[in-house]
Image (tube, rainbow, N blue to C red):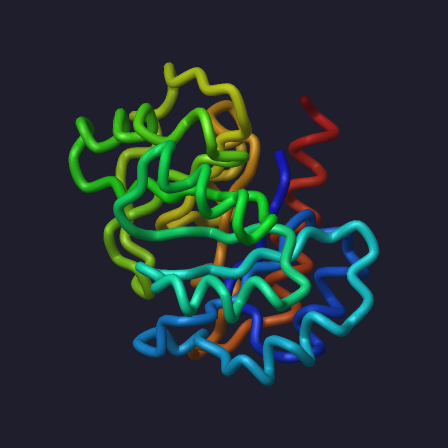
Length: 205
């Protein structure tokens, strides 16, 4: 199981993720309602930190064409997209902006899980998340237990350390933010503890 730490906003957070070999670093680029949102200039600075093998992810909520154009100039490996997409629209985005795509399925009801079928062919990773955006709302992660897709499965939404053993049987990647914060600020010790716990689970499996 891989770890994506989302909502990074300071150099020490990015450097910590690099040093402990987190798989993905996520940056909130166009959603100012989130306390994790960062400016374009700050994103440039954070992405200039040597990333080694880390994959950089730009999180975009209903981005306009001009926003996709703007953020495509950043050193991002992935666009993580929230919004209404299908395989055709994703094909156009990938072709135009040369980024890999994490397509987000927001889950409130069990039937929402199957929306992945509309985007599976052109998604490098499919993320099942809550409907809460900046709020870490929960949903029944077991709903994706029997889902088989071509790419990797990622899950988000109120993920805590005590759930990781069960989640390792459901998904390839966990996307975590709120559980790694203290008073809405990323907590370096919590990031390290979370990553250590995932490594321990991976070694046991």
